Image 1 (cartoon, rainbow, N blue to C red):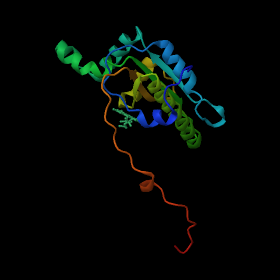
Image 2 (image 1 turned 45 degrees about the horizontal axis):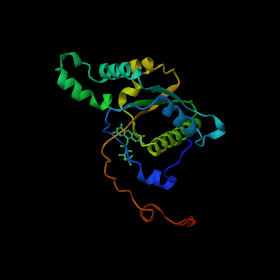
Image 3 (image 1 turned 30 degrees about the horizontal axis):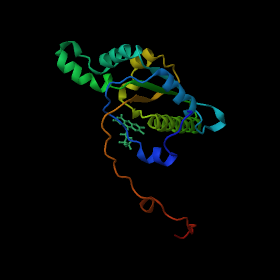
Image 4 (image 1 turned 180 degrees about the vertical axis):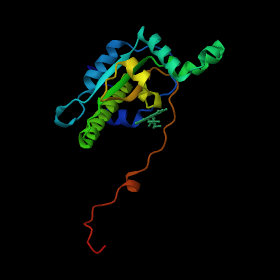
Amino acid sequence: MTQQSLSIREAIVGRRSIKKFNGQLVDREKIMQIIDDAVWAPNHQNREPWRMVVACGDELKDLQQLLRDTTIPNWKELSPDSLEKQMQKFTLPGAYIFVIVPEDVRQKIRLEDYAAASSMIQNIQLLAWDNGIGSCWKTPEFLDAPLFRSSLGVNPGERIISMLQLGYFDDLPKARERKKSIQLVTNFRLKQETE
Ligand SMILES: Cc1cc2nc3c(=O)[nH]c(=O)nc-3n(C[C@H](O)[C@H](O)[C@H](O)COP(=O)(O)O)c2cc1C
């Protein structure tokens, strides 16, 4: 990223998950730039435990068809209006990033890799926000469906941990309150065995 407009704090506190996009497409170049920066996330042993499948531009049509076939099996029976309405959650985002992680059989490695990839995803969301691009991390059940996995080229031993929808938006959602540190933190005190 060459130009920075938001401070880290402004990006973290000001970002909202965007679920209603306005249909404007996101440039592939912008997505690639964001990913190049986001991968500077912490990751144990520099395993870089992630890869991504991106859909933008012309690829969106094929992806939307796959999402339609996966989530609305009876779509042929619907009126065009009803189908269009149901599909808006898939047709209005301007780009998609599917984040794929290796699923190591060792729990420690698997959890570390998921944690690292999650940090990387947060980086994507913050960098996108800094570019005026909203995003939402989604985990619908169909991400694990065999046909969906194979359509994305996901290999055995890999898992899609996020369908990131990205795009431009007209309305900023209201912030949902977070707990304060005072509610979350207890000060360290050595527990005595008798306690
Ligand atoms: C692991 C994970 C999975 C999520 N899955 C979904 C999802 O399937 N559908 C959805 O609408 N939002 C999903 N979200 C987004 C959350 O709903 C959102 O982050 C939360 O409401 C807080 O809003 P904010 O991001 O604007 O602060 C997910 C977020 C995370 C971190």
